[in-house]
Every structure is written in structure tokens, then in C-alpha cells.
Picture 1 (cartoon, rainbow, N blue to C red):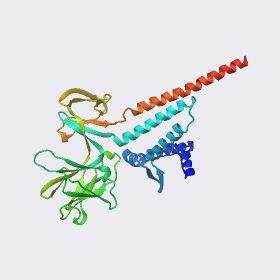
Picture 2 (picture 1 turned 45 degrees about the horizontal axis):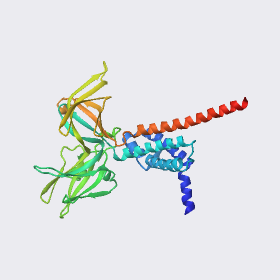
Picture 3 (picture 1 turned 90 degrees about the horizontal axis):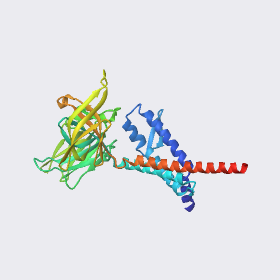
Picture 4 (picture 1 turned 45 degrees about the vertical axis):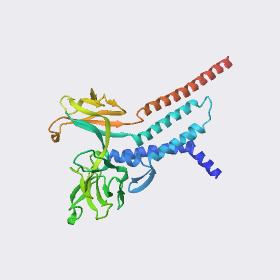
Length: 385
């Protein structure tokens, strides 16, 4: 057992493993870039860069490969064991150790961003106020009791718990606060409703799967669901579709409930009201030269006027709002709309600090190299004299 542990330690800390990991990272970067010619950037990111393993279609031959997430975890372990713990520690290696520490900080920041960041968008018309932003690609199922008045509490099922339900797989969700179980099955990442062949489906309607689009932000998810009362009785079948005008409604034990499929939502700790939007175009073209929004930011009853432009984001309470789009759709009465990309990243400053640490390590290492070289040259000059 001791020999096995020692051999494992040596392998994980070896330079050879580091070279293998870096080679796989280069290969996956190339394959992922080429794959974007056939599918969306988000799908490539999910399959190649956010997974532990990926099966790449190489001219019709399935080629299993480690995913980037797995490779980065192995790289972090390799750096800790080989680049920090096992490395010889003296005045000649401190710069290298500092560089390795900076790389580890960068990897840790990437993990924090992946696990805990929030990314979405907030679209407002002039005169409209909002305090909620939504994801472009993540979905969630929201269950709430339909009340005439009073506060409403939602039970939210995040997309990672149901979006992979394929090939006959089902999942059931419940809570002590609701009198039924929700069964979810046959989930499509992109679909549209249509008449069911032979009058089947749900009330003669079904969901027709569509291939993922190049811009996955425009894909609309859907799912077949069944409400199963805890008190007994037959299930209530239904369809959920991301662009439905109204959520599914079901009466269970005399209480009415709504079930809807929505883009994932987050609440801001402040509200934004769009007061005015302005844009300039390059002469003779429809290409935007600049665009900016005057907004009223309100938090805890205090309001302030802020300008958000292409190169001047709003940073407030850990959130960053970037001016990312605009339009004048007929659905909004011809009023100008402004779209803000909203990001909350707990590791926002990590890349900068990791680069500073890496630069300090390189400066220390090459300064020591230079000093030793100058000393050796001086000693050689003295000997020759």
C-alpha cells in the first residue's frame, strides 16, 4: 500500500503529468474552437470546458477525452504537490514558487466564478423600473399558489435538476408546502408547441424538438410534467414551454397552483429605472458608435442618477451592469429599450491579483538569475586579470 501511495504521489507531482495536462488543454481548445462552426458557443463551453469528460465526434468515430474541468483540477493538484510541496526550497526557487502560487490563485478564482457567479441581463423601456435580472440560457421551474391577495412564495426547481432528463428518465419534486408531487419528463433544450399526431399529447398538443441554434440564447426549453396529488387521485398532465404567455394551472385539494418554466431569475438588492436612452451611429451606417443610458438607482429609499455607457459600467453592491444592447421594438410601443448585462462575480478581482503575484514571482526569479550572472561575470573578469 505504501508503494502504491508513493507511486501515486510521484505521478501527481511529476512534470510529465503537467505536460500531458497542458497538451490535452491545447487539444480541447482547438477541438472546441472548431466545434463552434457547428453549434453554439454555450453548448461548446458546456460540453468541452465545464464537463469532467467529453466524447468528441472525430469523423464519425467517438473519441472519449477528459473535460477541461477535470484537467484543471488535476493541474491544481499537480501544482500543489510538485510546484509547492516537493520543489526544492532555497533562494534560487522562491520566484518559481511564487509564480506557482499565482497560477493556483487564478485556478481557484475560476472555480469560484464557475460555482457562484451570476450572469444575466435586465431589459428596460424608458420609464420602466426593474430589480430582477434573468439568465439567457439557464432555466428553472417555479411553483406558486394562485392567490387573490397577499404575498406569494415560490418553490423554485433549478435547471440542473431536470434539464438532462432524456430517454425516458423522470424526476419527482415536492415540498411540505405543496400538496402534490411534480413529475418532470421529456425535457427539450429547444422546442416549440404543436399539434400532437393522432390527437394524443396533452389536450391535443405536444412539444416538437428543434436542433440547438447557433445562438443558444434564443433556444426555448420545454418539458412534459404531471401533477400528482399527495391525497390520491389521478395525475394532471401538462406541458411547460419557456415562451408560454401564462403558466400551467392545476387545482389540488381546492387550491389553485401555477407551474411555469422560466429563465433563471435573480433579485437585485436595488432597483434601476431607465430615464433616458441615447445612441449615435457611424455616419451613413446602421452601426452603433456609442450608446448610453441615464438611470435612477434606488436602494433603501435613497435614489441617485447614474449614467451607464459602453465603457462606463455601473458597479453597486457586488453587481456590475454593462450597457450591452438597445432596440425600439413594436411590442414595447416603439419606445427605446436598453439592455444591461448583469454580472455578480465573487472572484472579480482574482485575475488581476493573480497576475500581480505571477509578475512578482517572475521578477524575483529573473532578478536573481541576473544578479548571479553578473556576479559570475565579475568573478571571471577578476580571474582573467
